[in-house]
Structure formats: structure tokens, C-alpha cells
View: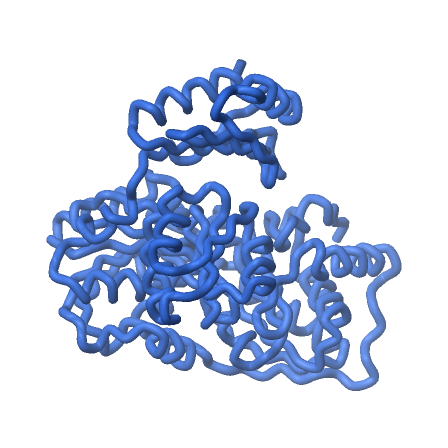
Length: 454
């Protein structure tokens, strides 16, 4: 096919509409390129429940095998299950998923052995260049001896690994509603939760990549309404929602109220620090709440602030030897999971923390949810650079206000802060605001939006 790889090769992965932007013939070339760039003798490949995923995954495997690489196919899996396989088997891996995107999309998340990320600066640019070259010349030459294709089930081992990291067996029983959104949580949750003191109320566990009930994107409040209602109707202790490839988890309390991912980051950080004797580095991105570094310090740890994006988090995890990392987008990274992100392990930590005490989840997380936040507010703008410059001009030099440009522009005062970042893919500016109370947050938010949209 004729393909514009600039439209589908993103900063961290491959993603586009099938078959309009890419198809199995292109997936086969990506497999060959991945084999060459990683220089591996063997790789592992998995896929989600989207209709196009099995064919794309098998084509990628064929492309790698034609280059002499032995391929272990683990079939249906969550993204963090693929990371588990990459770590446990010490093999480079490829996961076929478009996460929370609509059904017509698909993509590839790639990693080196030990679940080390592959992004633009760590191999993805080279993979793209190889594929573009082969599209022009007719493809790569096959190896003298083709590699093998072998099927392997890793779900049981993945579940056992996670349960070995968080022990729930002696805790009080909990009633938990889980909304899998017809995504891969419906495949992994039953095995991970098996034998634990949990009464599971499943929602939308049927694997269906057309997402017949709602988008598998719990960041959008519209997609957790069913979960919130079911938690209240069941009198459950909490609710958990997973995105399409089940690498992110979102939590609602016993009242159906959403729990901030920053509060989850702080809660899990306190548990990981306790597990490591009150010592260790915890990574958080710059739009997480003030509460995260506060809780880390209160529990003896060292917080490290980084840019938004999993490649930055993972790089800092590796550089600092961090024990845990969290993003406000509900990605949670663990040293005990090859520095990779796993929503399932974060969910187990929340369940364990709740079960280890007698109170409700709302009371437990209140100590970690200390400030008023705006959530992410997107504004369409004609000129991202000009609008960012206008904000900088407006706040620069104000008494008691500091500015930094680690990622976009962060403006910080004694009682509030906000960050404005440009989208890499759309003409948007993304605003996040936090303050010590709701009124102060609203004032800071409205002042910033007036400049952004002015």
C-alpha cells in the first residue's frame, strides 16, 4: 500500500486507521524493521481484542520470522501483560493495540528486552526509516533461515507475578465493580482476581473491539457513568475502570465519586516506600497534584518531577533507580515490573490499602487529595507559540510568581499553580490548574483561560 508514515508513527508508538492508513502488508514490514533494529534472536508479540489485531499481529510476526527471528506469540493480552512477557522472558516485545482509540484504529507499542521503551529517540525513528526505504524498494531480503512461530500462554504467570507483589489474602473481603469497557480487562481481571477475598461485579467483560457500550477511555467522565451508577446500586466498596488495553486503571469510591489519579499516585507511593523501608525515589510528572511530592517526602522518599509522557517517566525511572512513578493520566510505573506501567498492579495496591483498614475508600483517599484541581482543559488556538508567549509575558516579573519551561509553561504562586502545554498532534493548548481551595483555583483558571483564548 501507499502509506504516509509521518501520519502513523507517533512519538511513542505506531497508531492509525486500518486499512486506510496502514494494513497487514505494512505490519509485516514493521516486524522486519523491529527485528533489524533490536538485533534480537527472538521476540514476543501480543494483541488486544480489536477485529484487526490478530491479522496485524500475525503479519508482524511473519515479517520478523522472515528475518530469522524466533517469535513467541502470546495472543490476546493486555499491554502490561505484554510488558510482563518482555520482562520475564527478557525479549523485545510488540503489542498490537490502539488503547482507548475508536474501533477503526490500531497500533503497535514496542519495547526492547526487559520492557525498555522504544520511542522516537530509542529506535522508532530507525524503524520508520527502514520501512519507508523498503516501501520504495520493494521490501527487505529474507534471512537464509527463517525463524519459528511459537504460541505461549502467559496469563497465569502474569497474574501470579502481580499477586506476589501485593498480598491481599489475609485482608477483609471487598465488593468491587470492574468496568472493562469490552477491553482487555475482561480477559485479565478474572485470572488476576481468582482466589482473592473479592466479590467481583463484572461490567462489559465481553471482548469486543467495536466498543458497543461506551468508549474504553475512562479519562472522559461520560465513560464512567455506568460504573458510578453500578457501584451505588450494588453498595460496593469501590469501582475500577480499565482502558481498552488495560494498562491504565481509574477508581471511583463507594459513593461513585472519581478518585484523582494523583491521589492514587500518592497512596501507592506511600505503600511502595513502606515496602522499601521508607527510602526511595518516586517519579511524578509536572501536572500531578502538589500532594504527590508532599506525601513522598512525608514517607521518607525523594520526589523527582518530570515531563508528561511515559518515555520521560521510564527514562527517569531507569536513571534514578526509582521504585515507583505516577502520571495524572493514570499510568503507574513500578520498579518491580521492569519500570513498566501496569494499571492492574496499581488496582491491587488500592484494594489492599482499603482492605487493610475498616473505613471507606473516600476516607482513605482524603488524606491524599488535598487541593482543588481543574482537570485538563483543552483550548483550540490559532498559534500555540504565540499564546504561550502571551501567558509568559502576563506572569513574568509578578511578585511571588515563578515560571519554568520543563514542559510547556508552568506558573507557580504561593496558593496556586498552572501548567499550559501544546498538543503534539492537534492545534490545542492543554491547561491544568491547582490551588489550595476551589475559589482560588477558579480565579487562576479563568485568568489563564482569558489569555489562552483571548
